Structures are given as structure tokens and as C-alpha cells.
Amino acid sequence: MRGQGARQRLLTAVVEHLAAHGLGEVSLRSLAAAVGTSHRMLIYHFGSKEGLLVEVVKAVEENQRAVLASLGADDPAEAAREFWGVLTDPALRAHERLFFELYGQAAQGRPGTTALLDGIVSRWVEPVTALERARGFAPEVAEARARLGLAVARGLLLDLVATDDLDGVNAAMEQYITTVHGPRTGAGAG
Image (cartoon, rainbow, N blue to C red; front, side):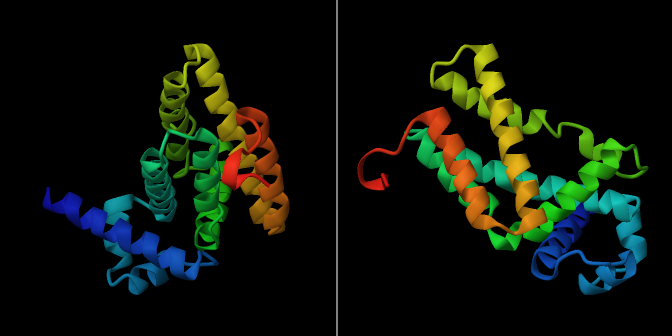
């Protein structure tokens, strides 16, 4: 239990450091020094630099899923817009780049990164499927809608980290949300 607490504290410190300073060409030693530990402790808890970075991505995504779960389900379109705003926050850009870098490496089977693939889709599809089912969609339709939403969001986030065209990806996401949920109504229309 005590070791798990130390591991979690290190992970939290690394996530915060990378959010503030980006990944760049950070080495395990420089990262360890920045968070007040040794590279050996990071290796002990995470196995390798790649293992640590995979855990960083998983932690950031877990935080994002917690935000998604906290959004109101009364208006799914507005919840989607609010969540998109969270995902495109400039403070997350370094984490988004890291996600895509590691995702590509994991898909190619690079040692130390393949653990990222465990649940990379299902951890998002399952809770969104539950939301879609609560809206009245049949299970297979709800799952397909959830997977489509994940694909659109990831594709637009990749576009964003590659081009830094926030206006363009926001317009594309708005078009997707409008297509899936209908046009804005009331005070938020326009």
C-alpha cells in the first residue's frame, strides 16, 4: 500500500511537470530530478521511460473520463461541446502529442509501449455507450455511436497537434456535433 502511494505521488508529479513543461527531449534522469526523485525510483515503479510515459497517458485519460462523467446528460450536444473544450485546452497539448507518439509506437509493437493498447478504445467506448443507451439507443447502435465519437475526437485532436489550427478543428467538431445531435437551439444557437 505504501509503495502504491509513492508510485501514485511520482506519477502525479510527472503528469504535472509534463503539463507545465512539455515532453521535449526529456530524459528519465532529468525528469526524475525535476520531480525530486532518482531515475532508479522511476525505473523501480514504472520499469522504463516508456512505461512511465504510458502511465502518464493513462492517468491523463482517466482524468478526462472523470470530467466526461461529471458533465450533465440533460443536453448531450452541450456536454459534447463542453468536453471538446476540455480536450482542446492548450494546457493538454503536450499530453495529446505524447498520446499520439506513444499510440503509434504501441501500434508498431515497440517494447515498453504496448501496454497503452490495453483498453485504449474500450475505456472510452464503454462509458459513452452507457450514455447513449440511456438516451434510448439500442446497444449495438449506442456502441457504434460511441466508437464513432471517439474516432472523430481522436482524429481532430491529431489534426490539432499537427496543425495547431484550433479554429478549423473546432468548426469540424461543431459540424459533427450538429450532425449527431441536431442544430443548437435557444440561447446557445448561432
